[in-house]
Image (tube, rainbow, N blue to C red; front, side, top):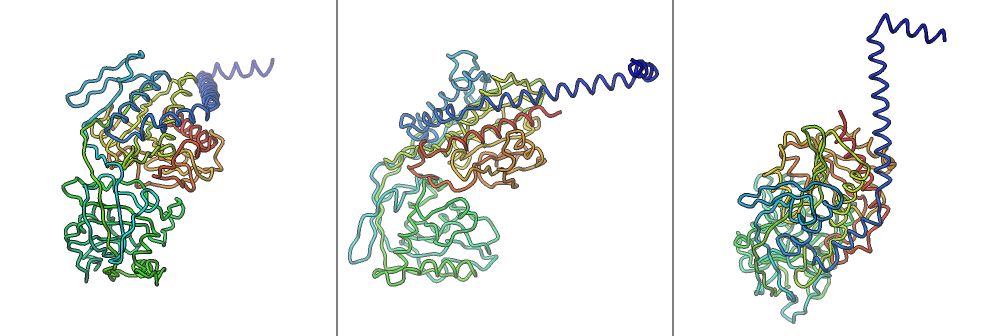
Length: 512
């Protein structure tokens, strides 16, 4: 009783202490309640629900969700309905001359769609690639030994193959992989990527332009037998993968990605006398810029048809309202490669998994009664596989001011790997990312890095929005393959990614 009287007496002398004590206690209680709410939301996360979503999106009913197709639109409408069922609001979105009204009812499943017109390349079934020497040709196996580049022009041609190194020309560095060889009316074979001594970025499209300017009829590209350390970490193999060349048809030439084994066969000669010749050539190219180009004794015949179809690229937007004027964005791309050449690319890990994560995070936040300071905008992007068309559409026509967008979280490839999470952070304190890992109980499984050069976070970084990219770490063996199916996903990895994204979003949306 004496202590109470003494404290009361002190409080009468210094009333500011009472106010401070009350504010401190209230702040402490609020912080405890927030932490309890966060843990409650984390416990709501269900890997079973996410796997069910992945199975739905990667099923044949959506035909691989190719950007700009009816399948893409139907998958967008499905996600919109799931946003509504989760309790998100679907905003009114103005798209040029297209106004799509918002709705809070089931009949509003087309609300919240941000769309733009695109021309979609459609590669016909049953393409043919034959290869050999003047002694005879054999048909190359579609899918395992080659894949046409999906937006390359139609092909009905034959020509001799010329190896052109990495297919790079950079006069400033004294590099010309075409020096000493004539590729006019021939087929160029170049390796993917670039040596470390090439300082400037060079894209696949740049290489195709160089080949076309020199008169090549078509091109082949292959992964070299010597992998860059980053490629080795990501599990890159010698198999061809689904791929867009990212060039308009009137600027491109026909092209195909062939297996490393097939490229080695071409360089070894007709009698396979030098099976390691491609490796030796790549070693020399990696050491210095001198050209190692050569005319081979192999010929190739390419036959397929590519058409274009006008359609709508469709993003889906859902909102969890906050109490303040600022926003954060949680996004994942929904599109994949569709069914080119008659092959279904299900896209379970890439990126039905990321789509399932944002759906589950939305459900958990709403169920937990989260009322953040910053509104959270959930975005299901299309067009990621086509040079980030969907995320670039959003940053060119943002729903809210980019200045009021305090962070963008991107999830891609969230279902396969070694159990660790690879997290790329730009323009944010990495302690926020580490703290989210602690809250999610996976702090010992995080690998933090800086900027990742690919993904839907890139357009946001380019306009000054801080970003966090979340990818499940380790090898993704079915990357851009028809084998990327739901049964290959690990439910524990999915759950950990969703828990981490939820904790990170909670921190970013509710910090003072």
